Length: 323
Image (cartoon, rainbow, N blue to C red; front, top):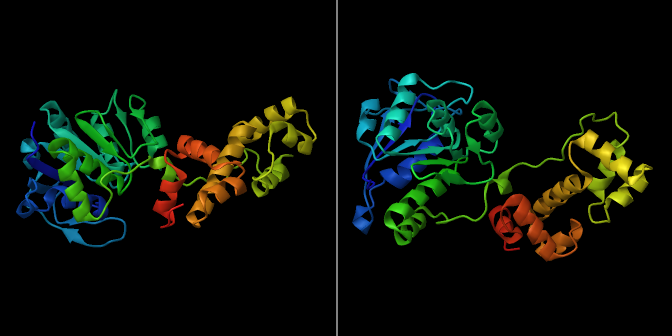
């Protein structure tokens, strides 16, 4: 199905940025530049004027109602106002009907919860904002939730992570429909990357994991010490000596207290510390030394595995400098 007709469905307490992303990609007329144009409409799922959410305090009006979705080749759900609220059945049925007739559906951020409630994600891989992936997976076990990616395209249904990941997903659709050159032209006009490396993991807040019995366990002081000495040898044998335990007893007790192995816990602290240093503009080699990786190659390998991107790409994104 060629992409000609696109709609964005919004309700009260809509997310302005997510709606704006869809409008920017599919609603802006670029035909004077030789680029594709779409028959685009913002559709009200509830009686307008629709009030914005997130404290923006403005309203929008639109002449289009849910019956307008029947002709759309691409149906976009910019976000849903409350992941704890069941969307209206009329909206869910419109989504089901769109999928049944072969239209593509794209969600941004919490819009995935609308698709999930409609049942169109069952048996499929999907994503949403990293803050909500655990909730989505627990509430809808039939969905294969991927928390690490910026977007997932199953062929007919595209789900994307929070906020700007919607740009990535929309440009992906343009790239599929019209090719790389057109998608690149869109990206240049929007002053955004045509394609971003890595996934959501590089954006997830990664605080020091709390102990299950914080403040009462004999390992409390040791965990604090580890965080202050990430650049040193933190092998299990060395940590066990410091804790006055055998390596076997220490490994068992550590997992009971933290929920993970000592090696996994230390690795997460080192990667998190590396992120902080990269955000300060520090060179990769120095970051590797201070975070306890020993070499830039080891840091790059761990960073790619744990965060889905490279230290240099992360630094460019979060420090404004090239690492």
